[in-house]
Image 1: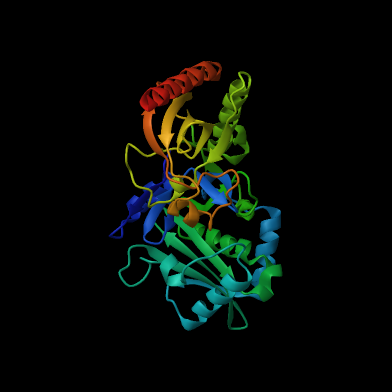
Image 2: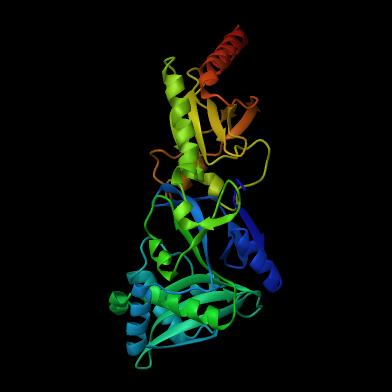
Length: 363
């Protein structure tokens, strides 16, 4: 699945949630979302979806030690979700003092569909220190699976590894309920932000190529979505450079947004290689790598550029260096080319055709 997919749910359907989780979806609000690319601090990452098989699962020695140590100091309970004042206050201080980056939205927005018009069977894991709520995490229960949604904690308790601790409590609860799988969310290929999720045990990952769940130790990041795509585009860039054709690789973060419209005239790729057309600033030749068909496609496209309202808006979210922040409209496309060595001559021919047409139009 190349583009992000956002499935909005209207009714509680535990079997459907199990199925979507097994396909690599994760929850956002009242929807199940999927994307092979996640931008963190302006850097594109392959989204590596993970799960833990609970059959015969055993915690590592270090995880057992942390669980036992914290269990001696704290008490915990896993109960039905209720957004109390105490919980909302904890979320506020976590958002302001603990979360790395920007955590937009109220807690109720993140958990939309968990209470009121309930779509998800959401539980909250509460951690107390002598009766004071110091940490909490949220999970959704399917028929045979549990999905971890998010965790929050008071900054005074950071040294107790609360993010890991609540996940360990969740795993033990899931095992006690006889569930088959625990989904801690995703990890990233170019960021260590979510590496702590590996502490719950021997994770599996969803292979982008085979769509099968495999042991995490088998993961070769060179074959994953972002890394493989960029590697292929770099090879194409090198081939173009051999014939004195300058090009630049861009990420296209607009395509990651769930509001991106489906339209055949829009570029539907996360990355592209851009060649300038000197006579017209808004006209470009781009090369994209089709990871599913393992080949390249040359496209003639139009954009507005840095003057557009889209560019002005998106530069508030992404650095301009290396990112193309404007909508890209496709005029036409070539057939699939499997060998990057064929690209330079095709680009030269396309540039000549464009130049000849522009000169003819001026006569």
